[in-house]
Amino acid sequence: MKELSLHILDIAQNSIEAGATRLELTLSEDGKGALTVVIRDNGHGMSPELLKTATDPFTTTRTTRTVGLGLPLFQLCAQQTGGGLRVESSLNEGTTVTAVAHRGHIDCPPLGDIAGTVSILTRSSPNLTLFFRHTTPLGTFSFSTEEAREILGSDIALSEPAVTLWIQAYIKENETLLYD
Amino acid sequence: MKTLEELQAIRETMQKQLNVRESDGNNIRVVVGMATCGIAAGARPVLTAFLDEVNQHNLDHITVTQTGCIGVCRLEPIVEIFAPGEEKVTYVNMKPEMVPVIVNEHLVNHKIVTEYTIGAAE
Ligand SMILES: Nc1ncnc2c1ncn2[C@@H]1O[C@H](COP(=O)(O)OP(=O)(O)OP(=O)(O)O)[C@@H](O)[C@H]1O
Ligand SMILES: [Mg+2]
Image 1 (cartoon, helix red, strand yellow):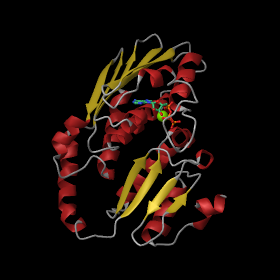
Image 2: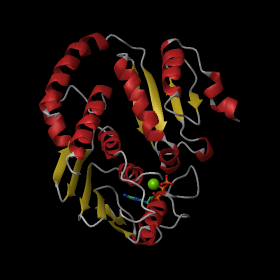
Image 3: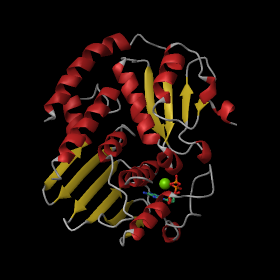
Image 4: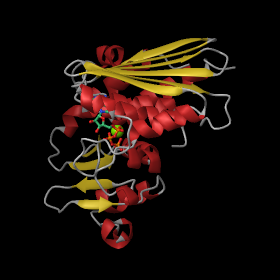
């Protein structure tokens, strides 16, 4: 993956496929180069056996193929920067993926288009409530589908192209305030 | 600086269009594969390109959705088109530049862009 935001999109896609109705994406940067990404969902979770091998490329519950690459690729990416990835999960409760990447490391991909990632996730299901929060030493930006739905009411969906594109531009603009 | 109040304005514009839209029974569905191989190969900008086209040209009869794994990793990004009364069309190795062509020729003028289809790739 060329961007951390693509890994984030991909890992969040697991949450959606696990039937999550609540998804929290939290990015925290400590100002010394460490970026902590937390992706927490209330989906169907994993059994202890599945969890044990979840970051193994030959672990998947897909029927379309026999490899599952999302978790192992993100783990490899994080490890190559001197960080790592941890998965916690309980059946019927949910899953939390925590990754630390060191952004100053030469092998660390850029964060990339996080606004693209978040805006696309907001439209993945009408039943999904998404919370996004990004903190850097310069401040915090947060966005949730709750606040957007409150304004849009029940007749206009978040999946309307005009709405998704607006959310994308809104996040992009606010993200620039988090960096010099 | 954009503020959430702008969403209110978008809502009002769209509410006016909704009444017009109801009469259109000819909905076309565009489905973009968003599993790991798709995302790594560039599915996100392809999806955004479809949203841009549909929005720019007010193509209310087109619904753009994302799905999990379509299953042919080496041909990702993959986009499937479902139109009423037509067989499913699968476009492969998608790039954002191909999106306006598919929207204009296939989704508006009902002419499949054969050279982008899975049949041409295999
Ligand atoms: N958030 C989650 N909730 C429940 N199960 C999960 C979650 N994340 C991963 N899993 C389980 O772990 C397996 C491996 O996930 P991984 O992302 O590595 O591969 P995949 O999703 O199967 O395929 P790919 O990511 O390559 O499209 C999944 O098939 C699923 O069973
Ligand atoms: Mg996955």
